[in-house]
Image (cartoon, rainbow, N blue to C red; front, side):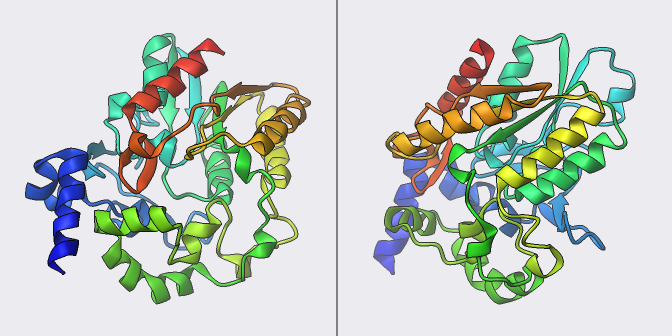
Length: 314
């Protein structure tokens, strides 16, 4: 036990220094859906949960705040009624929300600084499935006008099928697993060992983009991104909204040739739609020592700056 405790302290000191030990709860490494930063959305079986509004705290070692709408964005939706700039909305997940980095070090905020003539609202939420993102896009765009929507995706997730996932309900998952995993998630050592030995205690982490509440979703209709995105693109085109997809870097040590072939195929497929643009920032690698801490491969601020540079170039 003393050895494990010593290793936990070492990982905290190595990653963030003394503050991670002295201010333990400010450096809680739990995934967002296991943290106290989210709240359940009553009577909404699709979104299910969201970020709390007007939060001002720390998350994974970085200052973390949300606006009155419950998003990590410098604007609020009420601001956009008076803004005369080109309006852009970003719908992503953990990397684009800026997990583990300061607000101004997030790649989308770095891009925003370079384009002052554009107003960019970041609707990204860590841990959201793509079905949740899809429904969030519908909910926002049905009530607010944007000129461009940016959707970051990972190439490797293109053909992952929900049919391979055993059916169960989200509610049952939280009842069965939240106590054990919620406890272990609070330790850097847990994340280090999980990444080192590639084990995942919960099915939720393994499914990633797939929507878990399968008893309320037609699995023939929600298979993988290739079947989801046409609906989103069609919806945005009908509202005369331009769509930009950004291929984000894979959190890995090496490049995958299969990803390169798939990326070319996906780019060709997406470019077949009118009003769609594709930006490739996926060639950046996120090595083990570039994550926000050992065991968490969310990119650090240096990688965020590289992503922003790649996006600006294209």
